Image (cartoon, rainbow, N blue to C red; front, side, top):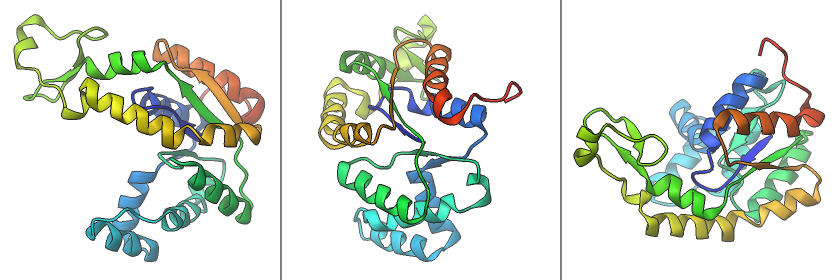
Length: 216
């Protein structure tokens, strides 16, 4: 499966829960790139040369890494891909590559959260510079005595969030109709407590991948 959603939709939280529920590996494109570079694979060396030159790693190299990764034994019963594809051309190229490798996607899970709630979620985050603890001014308020020293990340401002959301809608948004046309898109309401959202995801995945085992 592929997990998709806007920044701040809770993909990280849900990914951790789903890989535990279904006992499948979480393949993050960023983590995968770093691992390939560290291992010194042929594709990893290619990626490293691009990154050291200050360039984006070409899609064909990333897709090659994905194909290598999903051939590993831990992906025999499935995997969750996160962070790629981010554009429709990437989605189309990935689909072609997967078909060539005789791997078929079962589902693309789209976490849907209104833009204004995304803004509220992200702009309300604050962190303690001493401990690294993350709070939220509304959803997880800090102790009053800590409030004065908490800091806000530069990319958590309203302006930065608006830019990230605009990029998501313009670049990643077009993959939604692509996967919808393949009848594998599963829309999930991402608003609510994490447990509730997880239950919704499992419910829409049930007919596709089967229910998780009771002991999972």
